[in-house]
Image (cartoon, rainbow, N blue to C red; front, top):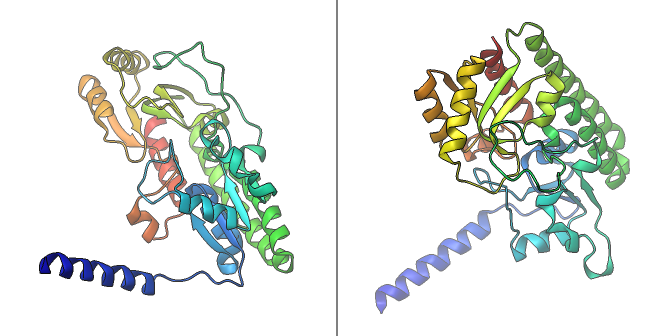
Length: 307
């Protein structure tokens, strides 16, 4: 009994210590809540420390199928600006946006760009008879990222009109960097020896491949909830790699890479990662890695895939 009491006391002291050391938000600043990493990073670049910025997706976690806790829903309801992706996977936001008789100040990324539907390409696993859904991974194209940054800047300027000039300057500087990234990606494609890529994963890069003129094959659609890839799908991708003479297959972040390794063993191709920027690892988050950093990594991986 004494051991149980001592353990409970130690636990209480630890919780108290964590509560005391956790930085409290500055109540003089508005709170901006973002569901996933891209909009969090964009707001960070535009607003800096002018807002209390919150990322709901825990670093290192898989964000598909995100289900907010009661505490997270309360945080959203109390926020001054809520930024989410929109679309099928964010259906949980529908009731929340009009809670307690008031509309939240909210921005959906899919409302800031022209969306396209998810495709079902040769060899891709999944039902083809379903109604097409908008592809929600709108930030994967730097051109779309420019539009998103511009739209988020408008929202932040409404929130903090006295800081509008400074934030617009930050947004302009960031868009300049996105333009440079976009030019470098297209420069790679101008020198490309091939224009076909293969993903041994979900495929969240429709906007990027469309923008760069790439054709693609993949195991699963971008928002697929199916974690198991069939043997016939893997065999089909192996045949595609051989037929198209593709030098590498791509995995995405947080993948165990087993499907890619199976394809590589069968065909002799290499395996590289293309990061969808949905979320970042704890290591990258703590190091301050940005969307631009991740997309620059993708640039290097694409060079290997098309040359």
